[in-house]
Image 1 (cartoon, rainbow, N blue to C red):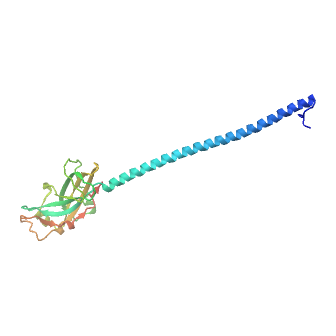
Image 2: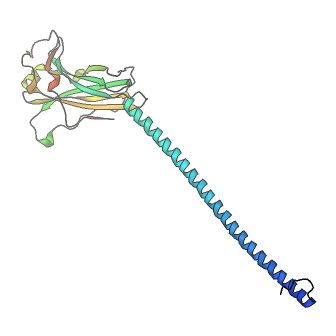
Image 3: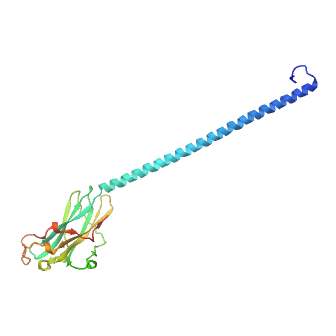
Length: 244
């Protein structure tokens, strides 16, 4: 029998009140549990949202960094592809007009895509014995460390011809008497690569006196420039060649 049914005595009325209180407590516990569950779900959702936002920010930052790295790499690659590059090509050993001396020549060429600026070139020449022990072969080719300011520019696909210094000329009779010697033409080119960056090209070409032009009279004054040893007889020496 329902204790809260109308018309019940006082004892049952007290029982009814207790029943209602118990029911209310049960209802309260139920909704409290629901609230805890909903709160937990809300907290979980908030945590998930925060993690998503953090991951999104992280991915955005990573993507931005990756884009920056890619751009920097593209700029570096572009500069490497476009910059000026100077190479030094052998241009032979030649007798000067009106002398009995020979001069080593080189051809400085720009094989890059931008003009090479502030170009300076130092060229030296020397003859030494060829048949020596490997450990005695020449390795040391000194070049000046100091750069000099110039207004010389070599444009892409352009070139500049230059000979060795006067005090490094070799008398023609010495070349023809030294039947088994090497002649070294070496030096260094300094320049700016089109982006204002200082660069250098170090070179060392080796000729053998056995390749000399035997049709030349080494004691006669030249009335025109004569090729003593042709450019195609030159070899890039094992040492003394470098660039940046």
